[in-house]
Image (cartoon, rainbow, N blue to C red):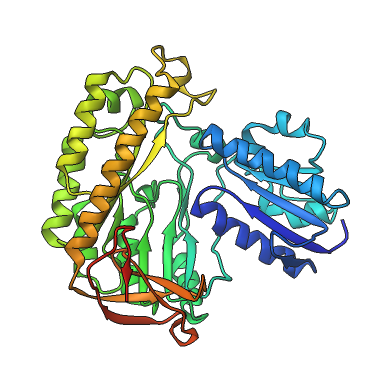
Length: 420
C-alpha cells in the first residue's frame, strides 16, 4: 500500500492507546500522514478491544460505519479481536487487513509488502508510549498476564506476563519528560507483575523513576491487590513525584464469588491494602472495579458484597455488568443471572459509587492541591486533575494549559466536581 492518510480508532485500555501511538509514529517514519479519526483517510486502523461483549459490538459497529461512510478507504483491524476472532473478522466484507497482537507492530512493513518478523508467539515485549497529548503520556512497562481469572480473555489475546527493562523505561520516561509532557502514566495488563522472572520488580522501577526522571508526575494504572505491596504504598507516600492514586480491582466483595472468579486474594487482603494506603495518605484516591451478575452470585452474596463495599473507604467504583465470553472458564458455569437482575444490581452499585465519590470530594474540600490543567475547551471551560485524581473545572485560559497550579478547593458540586 502506498503511503497516504491514516486514521486510528482505538478502543479499550490505556495500553491500546500507548500502542496505537507507537504504531502511528512508525507509519509516519514510512511516509504516512496521521489524521484525526473523524477525517477522510486512505486507511482506517481499528485497534480493538474484546474485554466485554459490548466492547466487541462497538468495534464491529465502527468497522461497518467507517466502510459505509468511506467506501473508497481501506480498513485494517488490529489487536485483541484480531487475535481471538480472526476467522469472524475475516468474514466481514468491510475488512481489508487483519493484524493480531503478534503482528501489529510490523504493520508498516506488511502494508509496504516487505517481509516482517513473523513472531510465532506472544512472548516478545514491544515497547510503546503515547505522544500527542501535551499533558499526559501512557508508558507501557508490562504486557500479558499469568493470572487466568475465570472471566478474562486477556491471557488468550495478550499472552504471558513480560516486561520491559528498567533502563529502557528510564530512557523513554525521560524523553517523554523532556518533550514537555507533565504526567507519565505507567500502564500494562498487570503492572504489579512487572519484572517477573527478573531480578528487578515494580518497587525497584518506581524508585528508579523517582530519582532518575525529571517528570513532575508519575501515576500508576490499575494494580492487583495481592501485588500492591507495603513497599510500593510506602514509596508513593514518601514521594512528591508518584501520585497518591491507586486503582485496585476488587471485582467482588464476597470471598465465595472471588473464589469462583479464580482471583488470587480475598476481601481481607483487599481491606489491608486500603487500610495501609489511608493510614499513610488519608486523602489518597482508592478506586476499584466491581463485576456484578457473575454466574452463581446469589442474592445473599450480592448483599454481602455491597455491604462490604459500603463499609470500606474506596473513593469510587467502576461497575461492570457481567459479560459471558466464550473460551473462558466461566462460560461453562451454571446458574447464569437474568439480565434484568444484573441491571438492578448494577444500578445499586452505581448509586453507591456516586455516594462514595461525593464523600471523597467532600473530604478534600478546603485543601490546597496541585492541579494539572488540560487543553480541552468545552463551552469556555477547561479542566484538570489533582494528584489524587480530583476533577477541577475553571474558565478556559490558554496560559494554564499543561501547567501545574496550586488551588484551594471549594465545596464540590453534586457532579461531583470542583469549580474554581
